[in-house]
Length: 421
Image 1: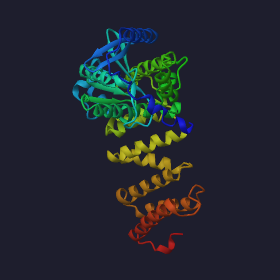
Image 2: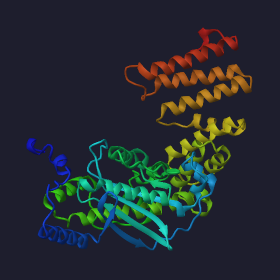
Image 3: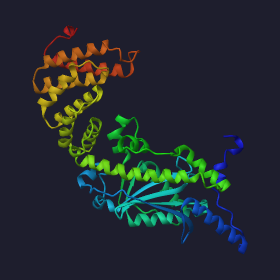
Image 4: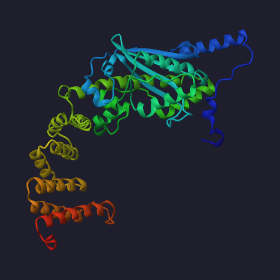
């Protein structure tokens, strides 16, 4: 950007100047005609409230809500969620289009997209501010909608959309933000379920690879702020139409992904999950402390055809869970499998060796066997081409821990230190 354009975006967001005298009839007529033309182009209606005016665009899509999340499944997504969050009819999907991606007090949500299930489909409503002076009106409308449906559902909304809106509410000094009863952010479970298979967890990517949708003529997200700035400067609204469609598609995708996420977590057996989805579901249950269910699912994952690296990871996580449940036979068999395999991850090899040494020292009461395992691990560590080249850093610390454990085991088994080799 040229130096003279450095603050162009900020200038474009300054409130529209208000004339000191009452407008003439001619000015009122021209303003009304301009507003009517813009409304027709965007398919919008003019809404008024205590704080002024804004545009509202509404669409209805035949995408019925066909599930009722079980409270146990809901807690996997939002452990602190309210009991009423299990009713999808109280959910409000939210997605914003903003004047920047960094957040902060200088970023505005010029388009607030909402959606909810109603009348056998998905109702989408968008609040659009034609200039900065309409922000209060838009925020009041948002607050009223949230009071009607107090369960907020977003995609990365906990990190971006909602903190930004809370900031905008605070800066009005007159409209308080409505506090949702629960906030379900689906980005994190979606990452667990699909990123390993499709490469990233962007909503448009999941629509294509998980839902089988294809966005036609979608606008690049990075261009959206500049499109709005251009509208403020020139009044040309045609480029805004793809932005509205983009936001509508995000909301539809969010609603569909929510059904998919909750269905997979509720009953993966009935959803015919692929290996990556089954692995992801297993990890979600494990991270929430649902060990019994996680063990069952990791066990199924081992026969689902995962790539070698993820197959090892599934066995390692299953071994950890089995150890915590005192199922030492299963844990031992998995650690032994992992210790015999050649692999590039040095940390995995050392972890398996340490777990075996712990077993033979404390449960099998065989310190000599444990010491032998530690000597093999140290030899493998020394010979590994994957240790850091300087021989320092993490390698030095890891070697020190293994040597310390071996020295203790040698003392325990009365083996002289000189026999370690």
